[in-house]
Length: 382
Image (cartoon, rainbow, N blue to C red; front, side, top):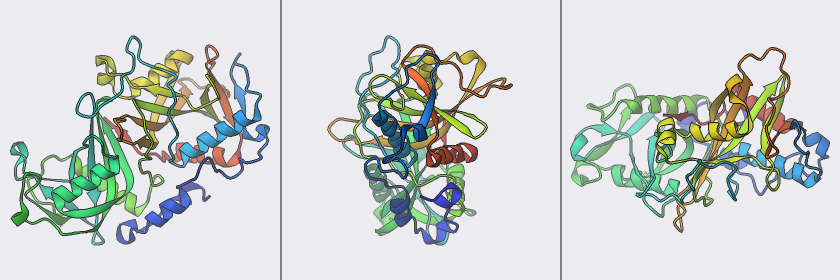
């Protein structure tokens, strides 16, 4: 596997769009395949800093943990069996579209002339204004199916999502997925085909957009797409179709020191990357999905002397079939001392439900450091 920016940088992407082959070649893994894991000695895969936690002795536990981390770094999905942290006094209920969650999809479609696809709104509250193709997901849809339906209904075109560009949230009950996409067919909608979905669609230079715009938030999204086409900051990320009952986050929570990386690991059952369920109480809604991250870390670390930052997404999974409307976001998190001094080891873990795993497998360590140093993740915004 290529390392660093060479692993996903494709200059001129906006003109060629030769990214699907690259995505399949570099980031579509199979099973838990990862170079250097099969037959690796546990000592090469990692050590631990648990401050009282018992070290797993089974070599398969180490290999399974390394394979799980490799899968997450490659953007693949993993089954969610249970959560390590749940909201206090609030048993997690399965999420349902149109009941307790709303997911929105939005497409930034660019053509080979670096023009952006816009649609003219038909809704009463924004009639005649222009916006990017977007809309709410329907029950039973995957995220990609919803994106393709919205682009077809509003613009008349078929499209292929290339990568997730950003995720925007207003707490776990409202999440918008923004994609870079390319047109693959169809006929551009004209004013003669105006309906309740849109009045028409058109391609416009990013420097000469029609007016009025429905909202100016799309300007940043168009710029984000253009920058990604010129120089990708993160690998191609597409939703993995795996079922999930809840809105939850799988944490790659890291502590770094002198080119060394530790990752927080859950110990209940086999060692695993910890998962925290998002709550729907007023406090977690107001604070956003980061509240679930802080809750899990608060349960095992003393946070008052620590700085915690969610860097962004490594991947996500959702299915939308058989009433499984939940999502799992794989997030990269950093934990650091507010006053580092000469602290070369991670903060002490309370209890025996978690420990710090020192990543020693060279390829995994290199990927983690590169992702951290370059913020090579999908941004999450409020």
